[in-house]
Image 1: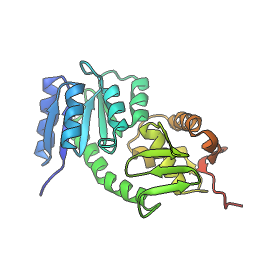
Image 2: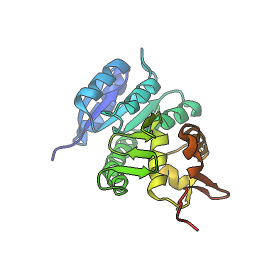
Image 3: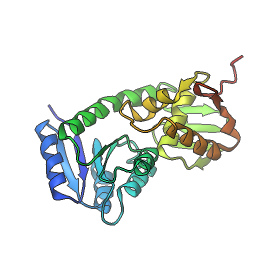
Image 4: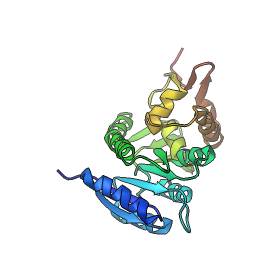
Length: 237
């Protein structure tokens, strides 16, 4: 059975070999890079199914690599699992808000890493299908705001809105269920999966940043006190 291709990015040879060995033992195909520049080139050319990305890299670091990958239409969809030796919550939060799907702190259990990768790869097709149910051609149109799910692009009055990966996913999720109220935990599960391990207040940060960028549509995302958030439904009583 053909398995997915995983790109492993780490400048420590022993970590590369450890991750490579455990993934290939499970039947995955692996490719590797030791710098952020090489990772970006391989991600664009090969389109791996998932990227295991160390944050501490020579040259372009893992956070910048994540930002660049999420900004490019050709790589915005590729799931990312961060590896960090820092153990600092600020770096983890930044990475997840830039669009990483999960993280693990070094030293880590190879078996747990493989399990998390397997869970993410199972979830990705289902998420994609759910999003596209909003419209047969992959768009959600709300007045002058157009959400292009396939290309991860949002335009207002035909002007592109520069959103992070997490901001886009939150907007796509809430707008697909207009009028429904979701807790912060439900929103995190929807945009990052149930392995998201950072405080739920991260959702508040994402919402605040999104509202600033949406201009006249900022009020479309309503705060429901004591519960969470919803996207305003103009037909709701």
